[in-house]
Length: 158
Image 1 (cartoon, one colour):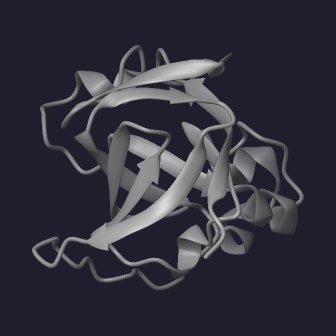
Image 2: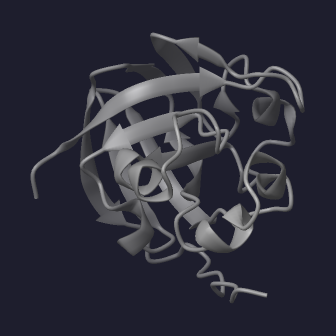
Image 3: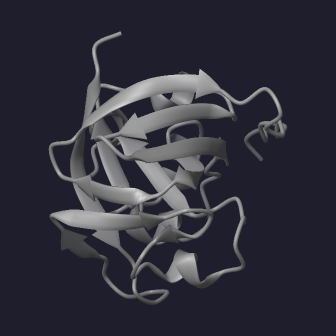
């Protein structure tokens, strides 16, 4: 498979505030991205980083940041990957997918019907297995699959 690329990096400093776009982010093992509000949760939680593929934004007709993604990728079909799949970002960082991100009611404030449209296109949540620096333009490659990773049940559209 041709490697993907990191198109954008964003940090959410507080809930409800606009995300800050950065050229590089530091991923901290079992925490998330330094400076992002999700990194302040207990170590090991399942929602450390939200990854979204540019193709999904294009499909939904949305600009970047609207889905509150931390890492916008291009060339990696995230929605087809299972929990436990590891992604190698740049030379240092390893992320492991934990579960699909389920669309929430906040999407309806963006556009009526978006919660249904985004089902199966909302990106994937991940945890940081190996920390390091991620830069816009870094290659993204598929790594191994963690056979011990919990396999969440994919929720069905309500």
